[in-house]
Length: 450
Image (tube, rainbow, N blue to C red; front, side):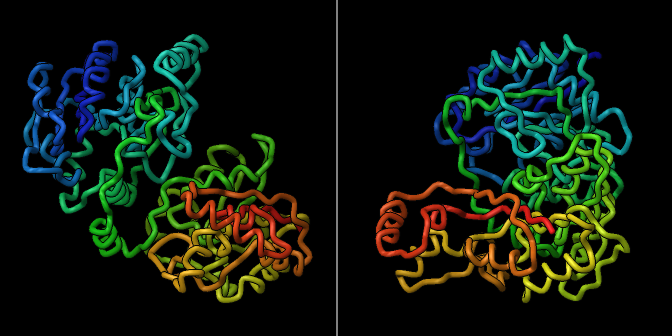
């Protein structure tokens, strides 16, 4: 394939990566044009850009939102058939951009495509620990003539992604009121889905995250309160869950070719269901969601219908092998009754419920309580829309009371501060019938069988 790719590389105070990233471009196939964009750096990055011989844009008035940054490249340059937007923290396999270009040019309602990497999440994650390892995996895939899979997903990570220039002409430019790259892409993808196109993962396009390779978590995101307000107003949604909940899907232990049915209650845009469908092609995923705005988007990807589990108006006339609750039970007025309803009316014999449930006993909440605080937020353990709160024992009792057998209980953790670690030890000294995991666990992920 001839060189038909415009590569747009954005950066902000990442001078340490410039030489590595730019020199590596000589190894990458398919690139016709490179455009470097410095987004308000203060570390001397902008002074280096002219020396590389590529087109460049410098926002010397300070950091701009990525809607403005990406639109600047579209407005100021004649771009090729395929455009790849990439943060400078990534380097790509020699053929990765060609693979992405081939993917978005295949048609078949593909709007955008993303690679796999050690620095990406969900179905875009692959274990890569070095540049050499990336090339080894790429060479192995090519030697085995491994065919590329194109799992459909709700959205692609904004770190690196490809789109056809034709698509931008048809769909328009990016929302220049949004700040964070990921939020700009979310807004664009939702518009795209409603027009019948979707995002896919190109599993043989492999890239490496230099920051993670150096043991660095990278650049912190800009505060997204501005974006939250805009997105909520535009789409009438508070959550935009585009990454599947792997903690839930990993509790489905079936043969790859197994036939089984899944109902996800509160499926949002359907990311977790799409992940299940990708892993188990013969599965029958169904979704119900109380937010009609989310349903209007998700229905283009899956069989998702509007419904309220507490009103027992499930819009499917069938029973299921699995019912999935991803951070839903805590939003219900009577989760106990809902569990009973699932057992009596929705689950097949020996059917299972898989659920992730926030732990109100987490040390971060206890830390607030001993200071006389219980501050609700838009998201997290104290999400202001939470109605019911659970501890480990409350979760066990809820399922056991309805006659379920607890098959698995997993935990998710977050990094604790030194103060929280000290507090946890003190609380353990005065606690009764308590184990350390009850303060450590952010969420419990459970699988219960009839």
